[in-house]
Amino acid sequence: MSDAQLDPPACSPWDPTHPPNYGYMPSLAAGIIFTTLFTLAFTAHLIQTLISRRWWLILFATGAAGELLGWIARTWASRCAYSPMAFKIQISTLIFSPALFAAGIYVILGYIIHIFGPHTSPLTAKQYLWIFCTVDFCSLVVQAAGGGIASAAGDELNADLQRGTNTMIAGIIFQLAANLVFTALAASVVAKTHRTGKGLLNVDDRAVSRSDATKTGPATTTRKLRVLVGATGISILALVVRGIYRSIELLQGWRGHLITTERYFLGLDGALMGIAVLVFVVANPGWLLPHKGECTGDQNGEKAADGNESV
Image (cartoon, rainbow, N blue to C red; front, side, top):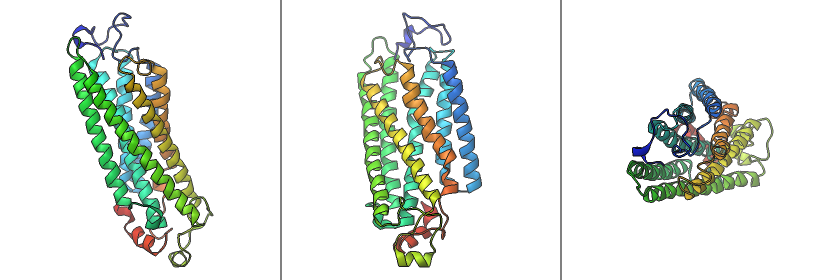
């Protein structure tokens, strides 16, 4: 971050002796491409939420809106790279928005546990939601605090940004560690449904009735549910790889190689978040998740499914 007292006017041309906070001039073309992409994603998620009436899907629409706001700011910065407002908007929204997609994924896992029964998971559906959303919230608070400290320090001549940077790094690594734990738990749920012989990897195109489910144990899922689980895996992978990139980026500091090289940001943040967002436009949970009575697990899972919409 540069010293604000010495910054040129917001929309000044590139000055090689005084680079902007990014360390480069943000690409206008990239800004337009990603702004268009996230506009389409936000619109699609909002429409799908309204049509399916699964209101928790608003998490995906809100996350896409946050990404959209961040890329609007970066498009603005392509012409006004020295604008502190554009810089702060893009860095805050593009750090916080992925947590909303993570929350949506927690809900999807909860549905899977409801369908196949609580024996498939060490935690209940609501425990996943409360534990990991709390962790994400705490990590974002820590990151926001660190960003505030770094921003305040950046407004002072020759200020040391290390304390704020270290705080942000702690928040990001804490969130990344939680994502890795969640990924391991989600994989164990899929593996346990598979070991029943009628799980997510043993799929046919019909759903069994409630009476059959109570006799045979976990219900045979539909192919649609397998598509959703595959899409969820892709989204989780994109979020985890992005988290690793962000952690290394800040560990190198505000003038490190990663943070001052735009192609890494475009590929390891913008493109990965595009994948994480768009995969649920194509494989939308509103269409792919079964409704009550369509596909259930064992007797305990059946009871849980009755409360499905309360997740």
